[in-house]
Image 1 (cartoon, rainbow, N blue to C red):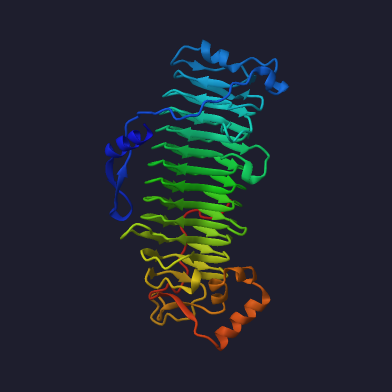
Image 2 (image 1 turned 90 degrees about the vertical axis):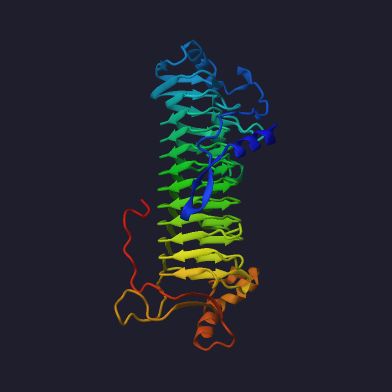
Length: 448
């Protein structure tokens, strides 16, 4: 049945012009047909829920009493969950209403189209990954969830086969578990054309967008999580104006086409696998006007672009103060790297296995270690910028040696190699028209 639905959605898709004129599917006209794929969830009686909610009025009673299409403004106070909304209502808590599920199951489920949930504090979900306990489950279309405070929940907001919803100005934190066993702060699964804006995700696990197309994700804040954003099999999504700090990985784009990453700040993605932006078999992606700073690796690319004759455009980004500015796991062609600022990186560009990325396009970038001149004052260097691997070849060829990358001995070897090479350095890239002066940045690109 699921396969039939997927075939129906694909056969009913229109096409739109994506990055640089690439034709990509447009899912804005897809059918709202929904197939129920949710696993049955257990029902917990009141005595199994935490005693702090014993004696609280069930919020479901207010929902059941409200006429469809009406506005429900409940009296301020705390109420017992769980709640299932199966008729269109506007629920406005005014920031003074708490719904607590007593640490069992999910707290609130929207199972209807066209509802609004606003100004409510949702708390006290269960902690079961098997039943994916969440503060808010959205299982309908064209709903609005805004100005919510979500805490003490395993998963934050979970959209499943839910289209054209708006998630706006919600504050989401997880249960105080170790990072790997928290739930996702936000998850979109088979969910199309949703707007996710102005939310904060603090101390959650991941923000995942899987099998979900045409979503607009803007002006969100993420801190101290694992993946600020993780795309997988998700096409034609726009990610702009977000701020991601102190996460293990900034934005990871996996098995995906048509993503645009624009005007984001990604900072302090550190640790053994820390990276600002990562690609895994991704194609036709635009990365522009981002600040990628203080990360272990700024941009990491693995088998990308993946599809034949596809491209990845990396332009006008500031890639600064990272351990490695850009790291390639292989010698794929199709990366177009133009007008970026590379400054303060310990290694500007590296290729594992002592490879090279000379066959990609490198043009008009600013390199703070450029050693040429600009005699005609045209803003471009008179000679090409060339990046070589000297002692870097040791850890590029032997991954275990990466542990010693910045050790004094490795730095001394690198200095001696550059001073008087005793082996042939490997030319990694050549930029034939490097910028001589650093271009000014426009707008706000810096952490707040």
